[in-house]
Structure formats: C-alpha cells, structure tokens
Image (cartoon, rainbow, N blue to C red; front, side, top):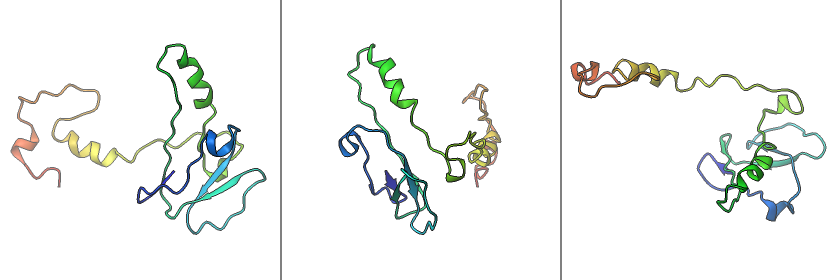
Amino acid sequence: MLDGWSEAFAVRSTRTTGGKSRTYAITGPVWPGTLPERVTQVKSDTAMVWILGRIYRTGMPADDAGVHVPQDKFSAVPRSAYRKPYTPPPAVQDAPIVARVAKMGLVPGRGFDPRKPGLLARDPYILR
C-alpha cells in the first residue's frame, strides 16, 4: 500500500499474514471512527492511497484458473458498505478531459484520421 506520496506504508502478503484471509480498513491520518471486530486498521499518512496487488503464477495455462480464486475474493468498499451489497458510482473523473479532446476529433469509439486537420490545427490553444 502506498500513500499519496508513493511511499510504502504497509505490506500485506502471505508472508505477513501467514496465508490467512484478513479484513483491513485503510484509514487516513485523521480518521476518528471505530471498526468492527476482526477488522484491522492500516493507517495511511495521506487520505489518498494506492493499493497494488500481485498474485504469483508460473506462466502455465493451468495457473489461470487458480489465479482467479484469490482475485475473486478481493474487494474494496467504503466503510458505509461493509458487509452490504455495493455498486460503485459511475467513473466520471475523466469526463472533462474527454470533452476537451473531443473538440480535436478524438472521440471514444470513433476512428481518428491524423491526416485530417482538426480543431487543433485551427486553434492550438483548444486544450487550455
């Protein structure tokens, strides 16, 4: 787990957990709440956190099915959704930049002809 400055603040693996399943609550530096039983707090120095997960496989096709077993057990949900059904909100953080580059002719799902002069050729400041 990396904090907002890309500093590793915690490592959880079969070597650190003994291969047993665990439930963690990753909290920011000033989170004041309490946690349910059997949930371990992992405190980050920043409110933003990166979680990088790796599952070892040998590269053999037979490994593929076995890799999905632990992958299917991973989840990340807000505290308010713990042990409840959860559907994440639609991802819209890219919408502003997608709208801006659409003005240049780069539109998701459509072809792009770099030989055709677009709005960028007429107005080089379009991305401002």
